[in-house]
Image 1 (cartoon, rainbow, N blue to C red):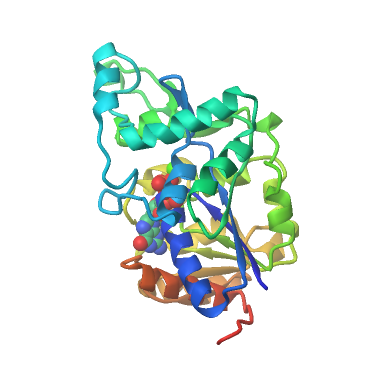
Image 2 (spheres, protein in one colour):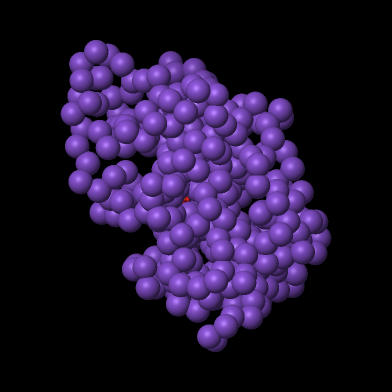
Length: 333
Ligand code: GDP
Ligand code: CA
């Protein structure tokens, strides 16, 4: 029995975890997987609590995700959103599909009954056969706020906005100057989060956004320390291939915190646990193979293979190679 704990954002985290589960079904069916999801993108919108990353993971593992679009429910319609727009309620550029709204209504109704987000998440997940335990990083409302650069020539002032507004409405077109986690200092990890890290046989960092997904999880007091302290190997999968981000704009986040968009720079940003950092191993794409020797000197073991999630089978093989880096013995291997 092997316990795996994955730190994950939305789309990248969900796809990676789906591959990991497929791999484990084949080689180690008794293993268990706990996913600790980013909650920094969460927000109250139209009176409802919307949790984009938790839902991407839930829909993807539950087989209900719209894989073509990349997010949201398969076979979705947007009738309610059109009504809300007609009333001037919500963000017209932030689509809430009808089926998706069912999730937000159910969650908000439990939250208003006084349940914590972790319990509401467990109740939502119970409907889908996820094959993994899904935990929010925290039950507290910690939202990522972006300080967005102004433009004197266009008379636009510096302003703070919710991450989703910068990401979805502005498509990260105006540079981010800083990211803050509102309320993080008083937040606590959700029940089960620290235990899942401490008792894991392997901890995995999905190739999620290092700043606003993994970085936000690690910013909840206690979580980074638990990662530093766990006896399990901690292995990350690079979200950067050949100096570019995949399916996203994570480079706009990395540059704001002064980290180069490269597989090596992100690994060094996490740092070797040997030296008080967070990871022991880092899986990179084959085009970044030269990173392996550079990182080895830093105390981070690394190997290279194609890292595109082109299919579930391929993603399963990627997850298997991440586990090999952890030296986990597998039955059937
Ligand atoms: P979000 O919350 O929906 O933005 O998703 P995540 O934070 O979980 O993941 C976004 C990151 O996933 C992107 O910055 C990409 O670098 C990474 N990503 C997406 N597709 C792939 C892929 O096929 N392979 C790898 N290695 N990374 C990917
Ligand atoms: Ca996200």
